Length: 255
Image (cartoon, rainbow, N blue to C red; front, side, top):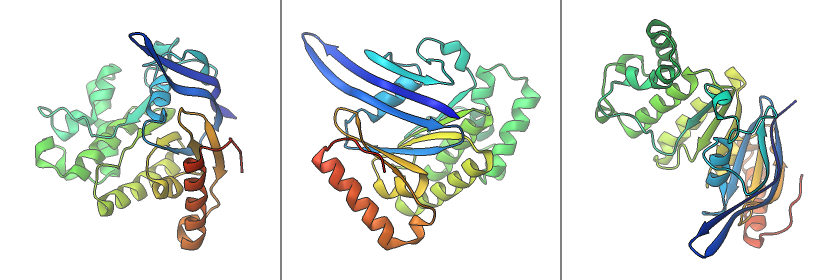
């Protein structure tokens, strides 16, 4: 069953007397429960596509819909249905870990006892139970991002969006967070879209990888065979093909 549908999407930004095309005729579908990674050159329109999906931008042409509804036209309908893990943790420094984890639930006006119980559940899942009374400045970067992950899962979203969520962390920390994040996605079966500039990360996380050109349009849609990351030769081959497609900015294809 299709959860996210993108059809002939185009986005043009107009600055003074100049136009900049960020997205050009982008098409893809994501099934319910699927985890899809998106890669492409810096500035290729990945984040703009995410902003349209969040309802923060409106497309110039085409359509991007979740369950047949467009977030930029039905913003209120999606309250509590979408959640985001950002590139930086975006924690509020004057709030404790628990208070930050409950923030989305507060916005949704969930009763205090219920939101505390839900936040504590997810803080336990990300290994931060003993730090619930700590403040962001007392945590490492990886721990702060774990709070962001707990906050995102706490509201029980139908769709989880990630924008370069681990790109600012050292590789050891990022690798552990990716593994823990993937475990949570598999447990909850959330439909997820993960934007990254790291091809290895995309291959590790995604059941599929969408490769975008610049401006954003689909160059390659590749299914990732199970066990790819346990096979270094296979992963290297896929990575090489994706790099070639990005460098050539070649025609779209599905594999």
